[in-house]
Length: 638
Ligand SMILES: Nc1ncnc2c1ncn2[C@@H]1O[C@H](COP(=O)(O)OP(=O)(O)OP(=O)(O)O)[C@@H](O)[C@H]1O
Image 1: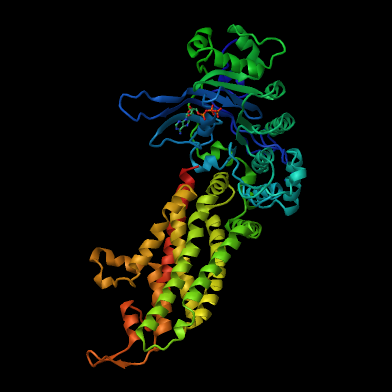
Image 2 (image 1 turned 120 degrees about the horizontal axis):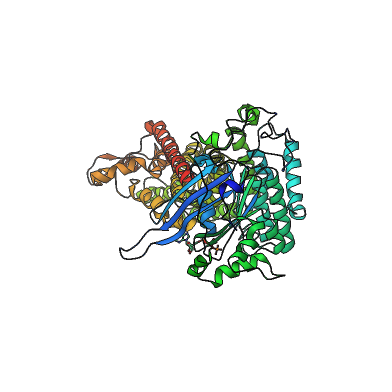
């Protein structure tokens, strides 16, 4: 059999693929279709790649480089299903990740590739391209507190044109659930490690539904049939076939498919040790192997057979037999143009109309917030733990310092105890509000990155919805805490100043926690950074050592610590005018214990507005910095 070539493998000439016509009567344009049809026709894109090289960089000078992908070439014609097979470790996932822009060169790995979409050269790692690819990873990263119906509906609402009505979204969701065989578990929570939910196979199908509900042009899936029984695996492959028939280019990796599934593929890419052992139509597999001395025995699953040949023969033997065909396709010069042109968006008159655009930032934030609220109500254990801990710590503080603020102020020890109670209340609020924020983003990170990179919403919408939720939960927590300590300790501070001072300080500390949480990869690393949020606040807040006594190069830190402004506000309100002047027996001069405390912590009632403003600025500053970090991370990582 001849080596499959780019020219004969599909329906477009090698030099340049015809442009999608702007004439809506052209056969290239999808026919007008119902918005609620998940298999509505779409304009396909022909994906071609060559010279894909992925190498692990050398650690030591004399160590040989490990080549993960070696000159890999191939294509996914529009309207066809292409499967990548190969022994374990042959590079299937690596190839899929490179093509889907989920892998890029870094300190350990070097990746080079020539990827073309309808003969436009594209960089798959660019977020504009990634956002157009429906990608289902091996690990499902779904919101654990959503049901399959909600997960699919959420994706359909956010990723379909804004003129899609709620009724269309509902019908689309129902079609997708039925097509995936998810009707029976449609309203059961997805679940996760701490929450019992649907099965692994159902979770996998939900992930597929979340991606397919947008009628994508390019669909990439990493082992979509893993964890599925044979019936569901066949059903899923039939569904992918329908998606391809609608015009999409479908590419997925698969392990040991049954012969029924194998024969349903249009094309196959067989990788072996990072190289292309076979690439072409599935119908040609048997002839290709037969011509090289490995005819598939009768009644043998061809998928098992080719894997057996790949595993039981050395690469050298296979090479001598004529496997590992060279890439003889003629590509011609790539067309130059923007990503929009490569994706055919600039040619589609619908794309330009406002109604065709996906929902805007406000609509995205609203949907995200609704999901967050649902999450809060369903994952009550997290909220309950937070509130129970707050109540316990506040009660401890309340019992320990019970009524001390009502004791006579002429004894310094009484004032010292009241100041201690204030500090405890402030620090407890810093700890109990900032800690959950520190770990919240790393915990949500996989879901956020999947959704962001598949064009569900903007970073700003996500950020705004999280911000609103945190402000709400922090307010609840601070109210519970202050109600207990304020009345048990018997503070004399104005309650409004007491609450607002602690609340603003907690918000600013939370913002610092979010900044650190956004910068790290997972919750356990975030926990390691815990002292970085708390220790500087305690050390530099000015109540252990005033800024005047700190080394000059460190003293400025006092001015960016939320706790130091929180102390000045609540202690200012508590002690201002609370003590009577006394005559010092040692110096025979007038002294005022309350004024001494306020002087030590640099608190001045006339500057309260300034403390509020600084807390607000710190909150905004840390939040904006976190937004910037999140935006960069979201664009550069997956
Ligand atoms: N980031 C990485 N760092 C180090 N090695 C890597 C990295 N990515 C891939 N590899 C190595 O490259 C090889 C191919 O990995 P890949 O996951 O692509 O294989 P696969 O064919 O998908 O395997 P499986 O079928 O077992 O999932 C493996 O040996 C793997 O260890």
